[in-house]
Image (cartoon, rainbow, N blue to C red; front, side, top):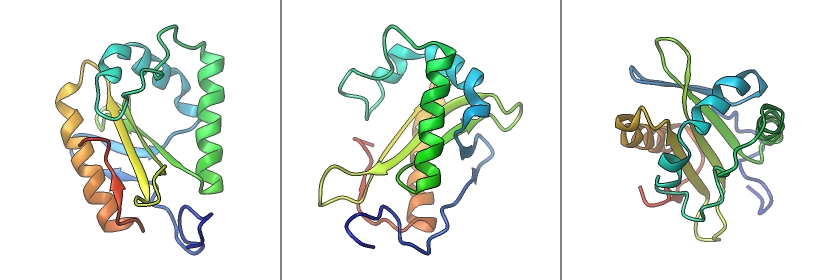
Length: 152
């Protein structure tokens, strides 16, 4: 990898992680309504989750569906450009959005990737299993060795 590459040129980023408790797929515009409902119902819970210490996200005043759609388009564009990888976390039973996972370049030269995740306030029992499953997935299928798991 060059200093400007987040993943090596020939690397094919995985597009799913499936467990018996949740399923990950790339976040995109098709998830807008369910994503918006998930995080707006869980603002305080997400802000209390490790990895969200700055208090800027999610916004206390929320976002309109159109603003959320713009945000999802930005994440999908980052995925397409290989600049960052955001996954929606879906319930395997009904495909409802129950969380999100973000993989973005770390700010520190000593780390490769910053890994953040959240789950809805009504699914807190999935917080640690999601973070741990993602860490195992990154170790097995992604090119990074130095993870910032944001206190996990």
